[in-house]
Length: 425
Ligand code: GLU
Image (tube, rainbow, N blue to C red):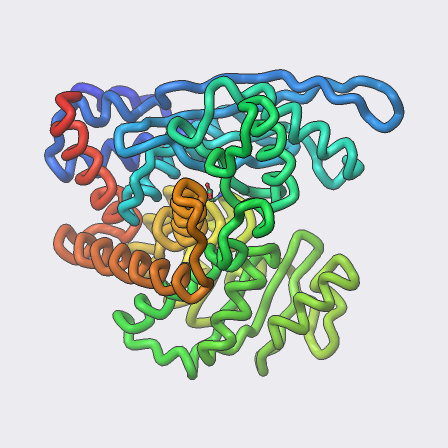
């Protein structure tokens, strides 16, 4: 493919997630022998826009925030993907995240393409009223370009059911009707799905279970370290603990704690809720968060930010299995090192796909006005995650590639066939 030159000169821009996503798509398309048009269409999002959001602060002053939405492709259905509130978010990151959503939705076989949105802000520094006005302002700005059949946002880093509830309300006012299918991750009473809060972590627990079977790890004898103790990390720790895994270390943005004898994840979550930090948890030792990542364990769950497993620490990681709850925690160089070292990495686009899968169930329930039990949600989630893991594992064994490359291949094979069926390539 002539597009190879796209990547010449990338070397100076390590850890640019957009370049990493493009490179992975390119490699997978090449390995699959797909028509060059497939990569050519997918390498850039179909539509990316910037919005400015003036918000009246509690002080009476007006401050303008900048937001983005990237709609990568709708080849396999409306765009789908979360909205991130973060002070350092960049447009390249949003574009990459939207590509990852396309791949993620297609690995698990959802009828969606990928999207992602973000607002540059520090939600921890905004009052509740300011956050509501910002959330509504962002929705007003993107409303003309989204909708239940076009692009369906959901939660992501530092956005939660309350933010989704405000956005649903703003969109519904504009549309002149209650339109719950426009956004997912809503509070249950506003059309949310049972099981959505736990979905990302539950998906992680299923892929850890499946991967452990392949590696011959007995989970009742296994240890795990969880980096990041937000929604995904804390619930994953609890679900793994319920499966018999000993959680020996966890961290959050304030520090890391360790106890070789095991921590009670629920008690740690209660301690964090009461004190705003996991540190100081009775019976645990405070350790350097960097040392936590390289602690000896069977399962490592990075559940915090991007680019935490890098060339610098990948050689020292002592886990046998890594399940990426965060998006993009491993840099491409680190990925290669881990693959060579025989550490199985279940990549984000598969491992954390439980979140968007239950978002899909939420949307289906909204469109049908027919709501499922939590058991039904979890049963369907398990079927999808187990099947996607098996397909990806088989692809990785057949082509002797990492699980990340294999997941891209599973997704791009489906996308390539959809493009051919519709006459795009
Ligand atoms: N933010 C989640 C992800 O990265 C889920 C997005 C959604 O539910 O739309 O997969």
